[in-house]
Amino acid sequence: MKTYIGIDLGGTNVRVAKVSETGEILASIKSASYGNEGVEKVLSNLKSLVREIPNWKNCIAIGIGVPGPVNTKTGAMNLETNLPGFQGYPLAGELKKEFGMPVFIDNDANVAALAEAMVGAGKDFSSIYYVTISTGIGGAFVWHKQVISGSHGFGGEIANIIVDRNREKINYLNVGAIENEDSGTAIVRKGKALFPQEDIQHAGQVFQLAKQANPDALKLKAEIVRDLGQLFATISCVVDPEAFVLGGGVMKSADLFFSEVIESFKTQSHTFVGDTPFLMAECDEPGVIGAAMLPMSQGL
Image 1 (tube, rainbow, N blue to C red):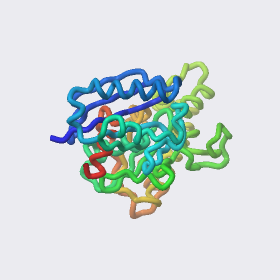
Image 2 (cartoon, helix red, strand yellow; image 1 turned 90 degrees about the vertical axis):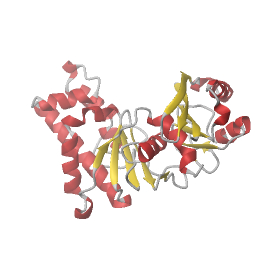
Image 3 (cartoon, rainbow, N blue to C red; image 1 turned 180 degrees about the horizontal axis):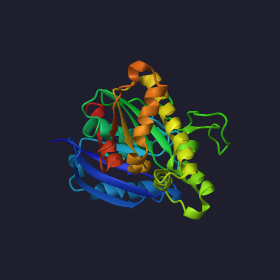
Image 4 (tube, one colour; image 1 turned 60 degrees about the vertical axis):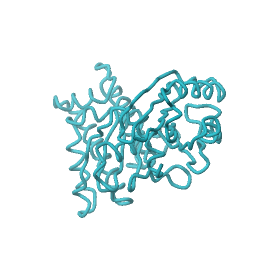
């Protein structure tokens, strides 16, 4: 049985695991990533963690998932999202030199999508589009078990897609960008403004208020449903996946709103793509499993 090293590297934490070709985690270790302490500290810690994995030398290759867009050809991060100093740094090359095995790197949402495509909810489809609705909104397109990252590492990124130009300017993203309007962060922001007495801490509370027929919550929910339906209709126009796979914290409240999103999608999309299935993500640890699947997706 082939085994791989998967690394889920974030600005706060890092997880390293030995993963089988069927997606089973055989051994793992988690640590602070020391993301704000510079490249040398992050790398020193990462190398030590890999060596703590039993029989790591028997693994075929290493895969890494990192925040932000990645140049998969050079093995470097295009942006140093949560990891100062790593923009342009040849992370894959450094680990290849250190451990003497092939190393692949991609965006964390992309590797989560790969996990779902290879061993999760999308394993029976030749193409899936993975969407995570959480703190932000991320996406990835997987075609025949390979992530389509694009020439600049931005392939599949959907956070900046505009759903309504008549909204409020929030940050560096476009006015009316889907992430600023319908991510968990955005829903909480809007909920706090509408319901200061409710101490809104997560999106599910807004959907619960809508379930209770609160008129302001119902209005906000209708806006979210329309926006997300438009997002999925837009994605279908571009890549027409065989299935959508949904992950992220907001989807924990899917029973309170997502059936309406599907109906909104059908209303706003072309007739011929309206039957695209929507599936809930299945992998418990998609970041580290998907990272380990990167080498496998390249034929190793």
